[in-house]
Length: 46
Image (cartoon, rainbow, N blue to C red):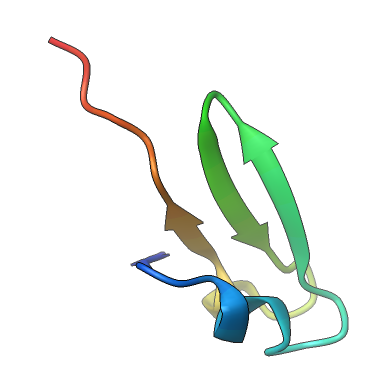
């Protein structure tokens, strides 16, 4: 899974890619081609 500063390119990589918000982070998930997974944002909790 890649950590990206910009998701603009990640959204258009594959037609099956979906952008999902979970727990304050933004994920790009792709069931048909899992190598396109990506995550953006989120803060580390102490």
